[in-house]
Length: 364
Image 1 (tube, rainbow, N blue to C red):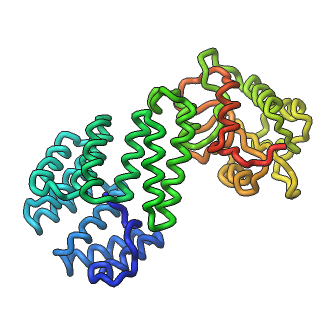
Image 2: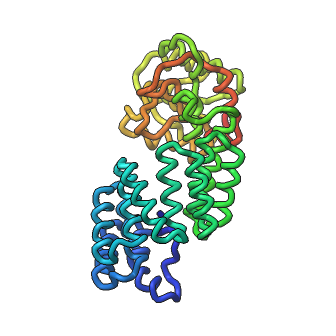
């Protein structure tokens, strides 16, 4: 479905004038008010199909898939069993995991209006969710031929990346970036380009075939300290491995900022030849190593992890990285994933990658 960030708030078109208020509220992050504004329009302008689409998108982006299905049924009551209600119903069913029913609804929509680009866009999304990548690409190609749209290019890039076709995926995301009318669209496409280039470091493989900690690098740019076959090292060995990596890459820190009371940080500081502190130095020329046994355990972890990104100096290290908290720049183990042996080769390549988190960072 096409997001409301694809539409201008203020235009001369009558429909866009009506939609300007909920669009503005949504762009300002006032989701509840935007939903009420869309509902008011559905009550006063129920024949305006764009209102149904944008309200559906709002509910979908909020993860309210049952409400999406209810909205699709309301649409069918108003318009009858046409292509638009069938498309909304199919998209909602796919999000609910009811793929067979969802695809049947989308097939019905395509039979009723084979020239509706949105039907084929949603069919491509459904096939992608099912892992039927060739089918997804064919549907998206038809969608784009009927209605050239940046969202379709963006989804096509994701399908191609999942297939391991990284160069083609990058081309699709570049097309989405060039087609963007708004900064949010362009930023999102550029982020996907960076992710794709990181995955391209592993040619001949699909993202799903890579170890979870390597996929974490692909998705976030964080440097994996482990990832090879072998016995998982203990925490002291992980800290020593980081010191060895720092020496290999010529990193020179001025202080270790320890976010917990683990004695191993003092051993790491001695190996690096720097003192230990509990807070980031105020000196703008400092190059801090912010160290935590577990990312997110410190109550101000998000601020500490963000500091090197903001200043462009130093980095953050976590020996354990949960998947639901802001990532450290260098991680040793990914929670909920099998522990692996130290991998200096992958860590070195990731640290030096032009699209990694450390690109342009002052580390010496």
